[in-house]
Image (cartoon, rainbow, N blue to C red):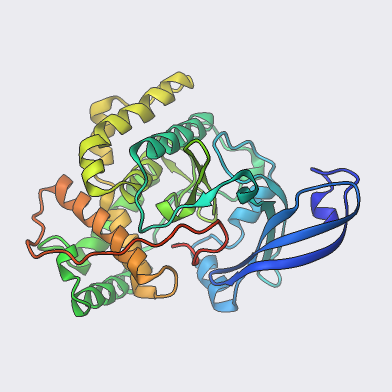
Length: 358
């Protein structure tokens, strides 16, 4: 810890550490309380390390095992609210990583949870942050320190595996009495084709630097309503609409999305222009945004199918948002049976939630 904090806290010498809020899931993560022999530094830091071997292999397949650690080590400017990075390291021989970062709860942050939608103003703040990030790297070659960042790509070899996972998720929904969450006529084949088609569009130009996985449970809120983003394991190069659609639909209640999505998309485009980036026109942007929900639906069906990545109640809540958005924007009818009530979870600080969807 002394070495990790050396650049940010010169002269700080850590004499003791204490683990707190340890979670062992997709990654191992914990708060670490620090005591200093000399100098000064943060009272606590947040540390992420590699998880079990099976999880390491899964993240390797997603090209996500090293991404956050290498992003942290790049010292790149990310012009949106996120935890400050102190240090990071990668050991490829052991498939091991470690990232030491700011514990944002020291600034009064609380983690957002998937079952509790954000207010419209919180989503607007997050979209403006994403616009600043996208504008900073819009159609520019990424720095050499980000040579590991790649566009979205889904090889056809994985299509049968993906279809089987989606079919399993749909069976779980039906057997649990939640089949009405999925639009009529939408089966595993429809979602798999849409999921794969969208991944192709998400890699299209204009390309920029994407968070890649900005769903509700990967965000936090600071006092004053500022929305921050953490868990950068799926950082990608790609089309702006991936981040915008995934974030907006996952974070808003269905009623708020229907009432405000056009205006919020306009706010994002206006911020791009303020940053000097000539983004798409409103009609072009709207048509692309309307195609995004199928990717979110496929992602969260995979999450439900895998089990253990997110609580079932979180999967159901987010699946409903994406499925309803897909129905709204594709003209597909939703079943008329009454949807089950999903009980919101109480917000927990970053680091104490279940492992995030990948």
